[in-house]
Length: 223
Image (cartoon, rainbow, N blue to C red):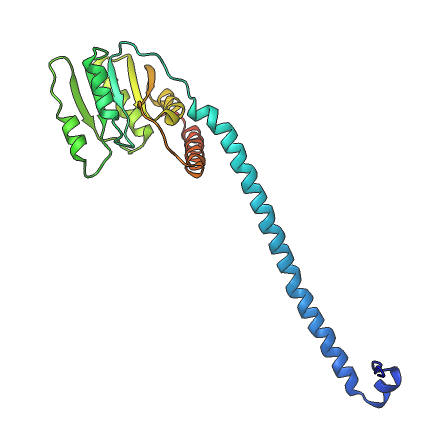
């Protein structure tokens, strides 16, 4: 079998159409390389973003676990008011009222950002006891900052110096920081007595949300 050689200089001289074939081949090659180069850059960018996200997730997880899962809990003590923050009706209202029944305070304030309020929230707000009062307040804005602001207003009106604040344990560090910006008195931070059966992804989101809340509070500054 005899192999056929490519066009030679003599062939190009005898048949100029070979120049057209060569030109089209070069044009095709330029198109292929022009398309392949952005694709390589895109793949490199995707790999870089994936690695960056993985590193960020690890850093958030390593920092978030001790900061939020094992946040500082203050010992129970007599306070002027018990303030139950909103966010989840996970028994926190009942816990705050139970502490008042045990004699820790004569005032319970329930944050009520829920609309419409649930039956359990309406029941909690309607609690009547001769040893303490229950007040439900809609925070404005409906955030931890809004709750700290209405606590300051109530404290000025009633002469409170110390309040006990109830929320998720992982929320306590941020709540403590926000209250330090907006409330002039002393705070005792206590978690809702519950477990958290979160997945790894849910914990990552929780850590990121709380850290983002810290950053927001920092840039907002004092109330």
